[in-house]
Length: 187
Image (cartoon, rainbow, N blue to C red; front, top):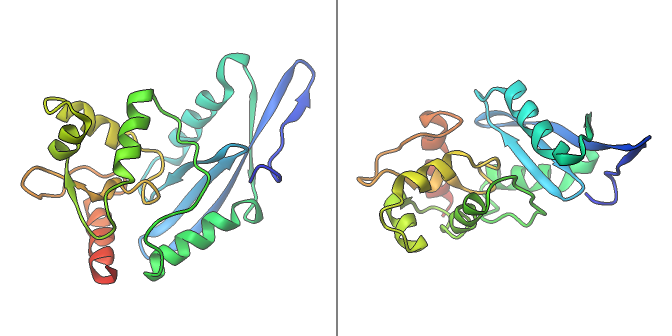
């Protein structure tokens, strides 16, 4: 992605180019966003796309008041498309993509933990808090999981309630159930 996405000079400011493409999947359309540092967002069906774009623009513009330009460019996101297609075909269990999830240090730590949950399995929020070494931080862990900007790639759908119940997911519980069943069938 780095070689395709460049920054444009705009006088004293730079314009950050964010490439995007849409994929049709068994769960509906996914919109993916990337920039020079990697994949920044996977937007599930049912999520508010305008809100995601606004959040991306605010986070990527940073302190230097950079302008953000969204550009549709399927070629720049070819690897993302291919790996998501492989995942939905049941032939990919882990993603090998350059990622740049935008979050706090705590969120980034939780998202790294989530990527260690094996394909086809689930972990509870309390188990993640235990792994973190803070068993009482279940709500904070839940909030970090809910803020995951890269669902499926960072498999937050594998995190469930303490009794195994499906709880919150940006794409809806029906989408979470589909993803878990898909992985169970292909594990």
